[in-house]
Length: 214
Length: 418
Ligand code: SF4
Ligand code: SF4
Image (tube, rainbow over all chains, first blue to last red; front, side, top):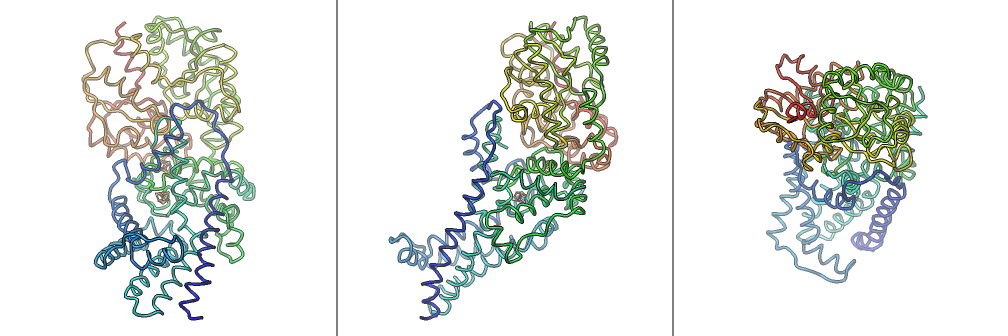
């Protein structure tokens, strides 16, 4: 078995299993902590508040300046770029068709890939520079923040190197990094990709009852 | 001091929402800019999420799903110890007013104020509570008011106010529709509000009373994070309301009192009330709508702006009513930038003003509010919380500003057409 075959075979199965089962375990674990029912008389709907909360926090409000603006721009560049690459890069679509979903969809052209990758890289690097230079972020960041940033960076970098499909070893390297990323996901702050919905939802519901969603 | 008691309380206090919050935080630091303590000092320790560090550590070490596996590899944070708790006691009590402004900028929508509240409960378990709050709690339990106001003192102040406005005020009146509770700050410093209420209620034809057994609206237990004290103080109001068979309890111009009684109270005492809680601003707005109170045609022409008490507006949901009332009596009402849900805290909520150790920081943090005020240049500042009013007056003095601070109920009464 070649290195590529290992990364696309048993290691892929292992990594994706850890990813799915670990993430599910963590989500179910959080929900199982439960919450005491609130018996105060609601002024408005908690459910509507939870829904509103999901959307409200996509865009910051309340007139905050540079700190928020920086994260807004860099954050959206990185996240939109990453999702664009993840979902529309031709090799990803092919891989997902063959290994996960069984069908394919429209892919982005090469120039689109390069542009999207540049936007995602710029966003990630801007966020990381901020993490190591802003006194607030230095104070509150921990090893997990840096590991997650670097793993994501390496996954994107090896992905670009593998784009030409010129070397199996480059493709295998990309697969390996992605698999490490997937296995790291449930144990790390990368989980925010899922938990953000719970966080916004709980706050939205809590305040929704009070008739205001901050 | 017991670190293990604090850890146990942290663990017990982490429910699904707290876990989701602690898991969702990406350490972006955006919340810093929303907090007046960070804004005014630039001290990174005042970053809202940093105040949750002991709770985060306990969660990641003892409770987070998959923490067992991480522990095997030594990948969980260190145990919270006494030194850490002592350091955070100051951060949790002196540098957070539970104002909740940080939530609105957080991309994850994390209710940091809610988690600070839960963290304070762990501090109580460890026996780490600022002296000022402990003293206030003792007075609230033993005497009936955190400022030590006895029933006789209340009765005397009420009688003086009744005489002043020429309207009798009957204490402990069984069968009245509305029972008014007041904050200690109102009773001692802003007692004219009692006369103002008498005039307004007379015009509206409202039957009301004040109980000499539960006249105090503030709840120091909620502020310090002591559920037993919080429950006792809520229960006292519930008992008095039931004894007097009132239909409504009116929460006064006091921020956290409204939260404590209306939102947290039923959960604290474990049952729904058989009376309704209404905030004074809601009641006044309702009376205006029903045409039961009339104000003069001539309006206040001073340039006034409104300071939103955090627990009434951002965390209480009474947003529009104060604005309706101000527009009723003022011909020159100007909103501050970020008014309403995003307004900046006075700096003294959440028990900070009762904590003498925090005074210097509180005054410093007013710089954030001052910036907001300076941009508007008001001739008078109106608010609807006795504590905000007192804190603002003190800070305004300290900063050498000339700006009267008015209570909204009194302002409405001043323009009452009676
Ligand atoms: S609740 Fe208010 S005072 Fe407390 S950390 Fe958040 S912004 Fe600061
Ligand atoms: S803004 Fe929210 S996500 Fe960012 S550091 Fe503060 S609490 Fe965490």
